[in-house]
Length: 86
Image 1 (cartoon, rainbow, N blue to C red):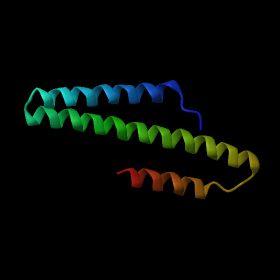
Image 2 (cartoon, rainbow, N blue to C red):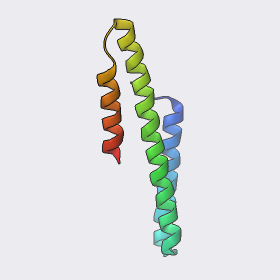
Image 3 (cartoon, rainbow, N blue to C red):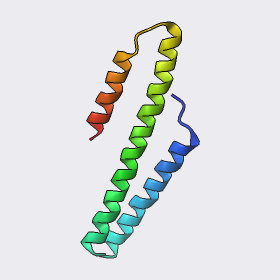
């Protein structure tokens, strides 16, 4: 699968958030602030997972339709990936 620049940018933002959390921990920042930032990082990762799965599903469904193949298995696999990621 081809991953476009928006996915890479999202992950670079998450990387920056995690580096920020590490700095906060090194500076002994308040636990609530650290948890808030970790939670924001997790949410960003979850949204990125959803985007990757949906883009891949769209691509695979289009290919299957062009070949005249059934798509229900692809949808089930995508849902399983999302459930597993939680």
